[in-house]
Image 1 (cartoon, rainbow, N blue to C red):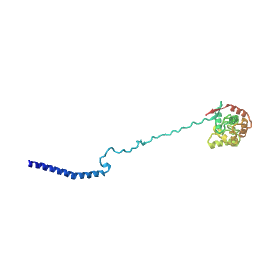
Image 2 (image 1 turned 30 degrees about the horizontal axis):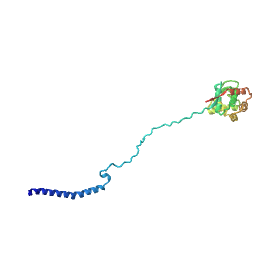
Image 3 (image 1 turned 90 degrees about the horizontal axis):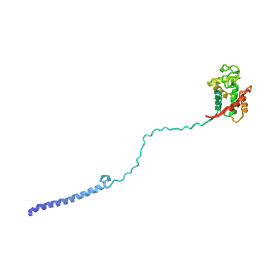
Length: 235
């Protein structure tokens, strides 16, 4: 029995020695590992608990391409204008009336006076020669010609020169109206004709120095008639 127990006791002794060696070797080693890991950064060992919150910014949409827009400009409506037209007048009469208003003459009596004088001189025929012949400018070599019967040599030839210089027809209504308002004789009374508020007789006195008629005729009666036929319209 004694001999049989010896191996067992020997084995127990070996086990005790191994346990002693474990504590002798393993515990210092474990302490070293624990100390070294404690000095490592946070990311190098296992996290304890949830990770710290990460600050985030609100999500935003960045437009890489802006749609091309076309600006729409509102055009202000053109203000209404009060104009005078001649009721029952022909095309030439109304064309002359519109031209005179474009020149800045707005008074009813002033417009009627000018028209009364043109009617007396030519009845609004631009291609009329003194005596009533309806011919071209170059064919009328005696007496007056045109809307106000330009008679003197310098005024008659002035019409032809004006037409050549500015590219018009000396026998046309528009060319003669332009020449009429560019003559020196008209320029002398233009401001007076543009001044409103006077009587037909007053405007007629100014017109005499413009045309220089020899016979008054019915021009004043025509002027009063036109004044009654001129009506206002919005255009």
